[in-house]
Image 1: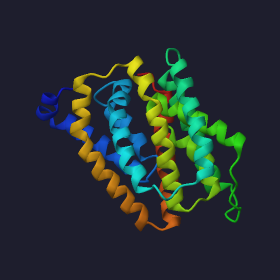
Image 2: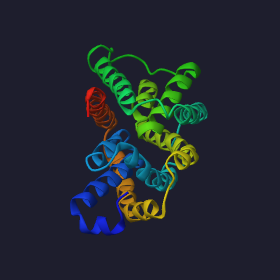
Image 3: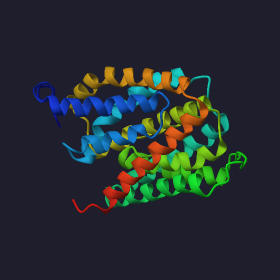
Image 4: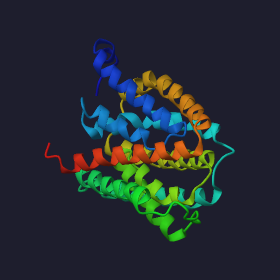
Length: 255
């Protein structure tokens, strides 16, 4: 675990940590999938497991701000369905943590995310109507989202595969995403603390990075408000596709 002194004395390490925290903030401000880049970025200098553990306090603290920002804009039906499913996924991830590898999960969610984007761009009819909420689909994709979020903070692709076809208004989409993952992140606290106990240094590093994440959260909310619906969802899809390709590459990596 990097110490406070190492952060000060190693500008490149601090820059990577600051960038990861800023991306987490942007995501919590309403730009989903962006935060999935944070663990791969930190993996350049530390193990993915350590990176995920280090970022969880930043996720949770950023959640408190983002939930307040979107406290009036969300889909109640989706929240009632996806939060329990996401927590179930976290529990499954906790129970299977000893034998499910990061590579398998990365490949799985990468293929799903990329396939979904290609379907939307090249095969789905643009005039198709918005799909309603579905209990069975919501439980499946919500559980998978909670599971992949537990493993590597990568819950966005399964979540978006379920939620994007509903064509929610962009602010409702962003608020629903924020509130669901705030609950999922809280559900990770006990499993993470038992598998990878937090130390004073962990919390100190998180405290240093928190203001950067807060700035990212506010900027993310501002960008969501300014972008048109068309370009907002196009940006979400492009980010999802690029991250999915990165996850597929990680899944096939032999390192």
